[in-house]
Amino acid sequence: MRRGLWPNLPAVLFVTLAFWGVLPTATVATEEPPSEPNTASATPIVGGKPADIDQYPWVVYLADSRGEQFCGGALIAPDKVLTAAHCVVDRRAPRVSVVAGRADKNSRQGRVLGVTDSWVHPDYSTPYRGADVAVLTLRETTSRSVVKLAAPSDDGLYGDNTEATVLGWGARSEEGQNSDVLRRAMVPVVGDAECAKIYDRQFVPNAMVCAGHPDGGVDACQGDSGGPLVVGNKIIGIVSWGVGCARPGKPGVYTEVAAYAERIRARF
Image (cartoon, rainbow, N blue to C red; front, side, top):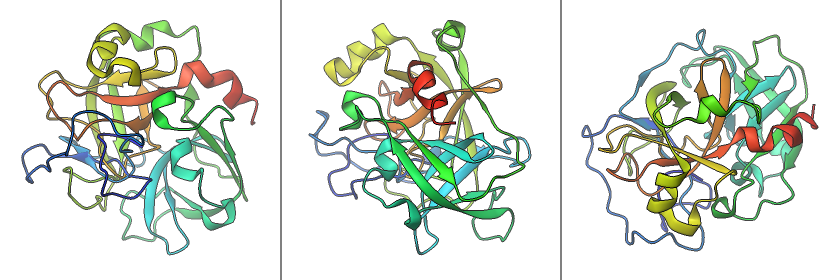
């Protein structure tokens, strides 16, 4: 789910990388998370810039039966896509497509791949309780490069202020439309202790990781849900939830990939 809680948006939101200040931001009714958090699946990346698909060949987006993008994802094997559980838990696999190698959604670049199976972590119930992770099995394999999973031994990738990159086609403001092109933004990892102070019991250490600037301005947003947070050549997080988009003192919350790496690899 990602970035803030938006009671008037669909259950599955899309996070996007947006430019902070370019468009007016929306007001969230409450700073207290509702029973179902706002997912990032409805917004573009705030404060970001266009990304080259050749630099991130493993980044993909999920599309519904009408071809509309609703979440992001990452190729972790020739026939496997890592995404957020909240993106697909209520969708039948045959009605989901994965679009690979297409930076501009209005182009015919890349391939549209069918999905034969959708595995959602059995412990998933809501993004606020962790386990917001899913693996899709593609009908066909792809020759595109894949991204490596962070492992439990990769503690250094989760250190305070580690620079990470978040990617997606989400909106560029809280109430904006999803981006037509892939965008990326740099955000520093926020330590578990600090994130727990901000989100209290909604933050689950060892299941989630936070990233964002203290002053806000750069973040994932609706429509970016399920998309990757990477450090170097490894994916360390999956866009999950947050409060608003790029708000000061409200970092984005991501599924901690290292915590679920063993279960994810079991799906290969």
